[in-house]
Length: 332
Image (cartoon, rainbow, N blue to C red; front, side, top):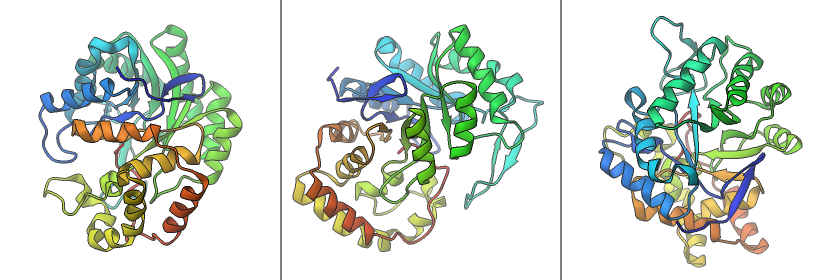
């Protein structure tokens, strides 16, 4: 395993860039077989990634967790496995539905504390491991106080089944309420050149010593500069900004030009820029291609000077994407 620079998420240390595994299950970016998914994860670990992010809701019937577990079994003690719960609602239990600004539907979750131990036991079986390193409720349940959900995870931490608590897709007030019950190591939020978190969420995380895990740091692949069209079964067809792909690619061209001048890829520039924005942010880009994974991870070694950051920020000030950005998406 090649060593990458590291960062801290609360009291948890990981590689400065991790890997989002969502794209390795079928039904997200089109079809993929398990052999290719496992090869992608092995390439990530070989290149130095020590944080791999999954969820009980990625892929059909726990597929993503099983894939991650198989691929990481030989290096289990060398990696941090993060997973999320609340989407795979057990039969007979109510699914609490709520709108989150999606263009293509609503979410259904259940984070009832009575179910959390069962969720964890299921994920442990799927992952083939005896502990979850970082455990998140995938979304706050509109019917369940966050204190109750966090209290159930705290019980799992006390029992040794979970090592660290995370929160995902929450606001600053919810983060503060959760942290008052049990220390939160990381908060996962969407953060990329074309979508920024609310400043008060970042302020709360800084104040409480909580790290930031940035999902979709490459704008679902757009910020790689390589997306010119989508397959019919690609979930990104549901994202409004991809309906205006040519216009947005034109608007993004100045940023791509800066990357070319610096001798790095647009993806590396997007990730290096994000790392420069906060000392405790860990992006989790996803890719199915081993060479692209290695390229993304190499961005952890890119250092942007003040003048270079100023140029990028000036270009981004003029980069106003057409269309809305999906707030659910994935870690890619």
